[in-house]
Structure formats: structure tokens, C-alpha cells
Length: 231
Image (tube, rainbow, N blue to C red; front, side, top):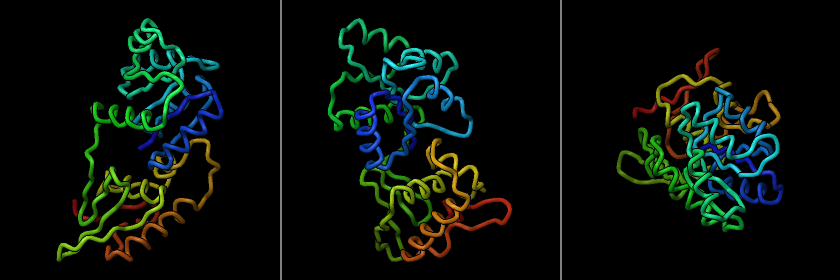
């Protein structure tokens, strides 16, 4: 799950990003509305949720919402603001925000509101994703392998390994290029490293193999990778 966070308060932005990362979200954090709009227009990147501060340099969160809705983009948006008057909430919601959170707030409430937005989204994903003998549990952020006798084995994965396996499980039997993986699973601002995808793939394969999954992700030379588990 990928989130675009637009917050110009450095301490608050860092705290939100840290909290979301711990919950297995991939977070692109920018500090002004102009950069945020450039990220949203990047066709390589698909966001699950967006968090906009109302008052931003360059372009306000309100303007970002209005532009999104003008382009018929249904991306769920949570608006953060110190404005707590009813009139301001109405303005934010009418501009296209899906929910409204007044500062200061607790991180537990932020996470709860994001979960609620996901449930209401037309692209809502279930609590679990199962492909072949693998089950990805979003609630506990774990992956479980099931063998032929019904035994379950929890596979310990890092955040990035979890995100990588999720991406493959959402696209079983499809060829996925290195460029697609890099653009979807690494932050836009991250420094490009030529072998980062291959290195991460080796780590994931090693853990899957140790759980009894015999080479579930195949390499198609010159093309990319493919999860060959039967969905």
C-alpha cells in the first residue's frame, strides 16, 4: 500500500512517515503542493491513499483535492488541518477530501481513519490475500505458507520483502519488469541503485524457499519476473 504524504511541518511529517512505515505502508513524503501534484501526475506510481495538509507552500491541500476531483481521480484523501470550525470542515469535504483530521491528533486515530478510508474505497482490498499456498495477512502484517498437509508456517519478512511479495501476489502469472518494481516499491525520491531489485529479489526468494516454496518467482531474462504460483 502506497501513501502520498504532503506535510510541510518537518517533525510531524517525519512522525507520520515513521508510523506508516512501521505499518508496512510505502510512503512518499513531500513538503509542498507543487511537488505533490508532480507525484500524482506520474503515471508510473499508483497510490492507495493520500494525506494532505491544508496549508502548504506552492499549492494548498484544498487545491490538490480540487485538481484530483476535476480529473475524476477517486484517490481517497485525508485532510490534516488546524482549522476546526464547522465551516472549514465543510469547505474541505466539498473540495473533495474524504475525511478530516484536526491537529493535534494521535497516531492511533490517524491509522484508524486510514483503515476506514481503505474500506470505503472502490479499490478496497480484503484483510487477506491468498495465492497458491501463500496467504498475506494485512491485519498482522505477516505471510503464511500452507503445505499439503495443512500445516502453517509464518514467513518472517521485512517491510520491503512484504511489499514486494504483495505486488507479485496482486499480479500472479504476469510478467513484471524491473522498472515497474522499482517505480512502485521504492520512494520517488530514493536514490536509484542499479541492482536494488535483484538484491531484494534474492532475499525474498531465499525466505520463500526456506518455507517450502520452490522458486515461486521466476526470472524471464530480458523481460522481468513472474510469480508462477497457481492463484
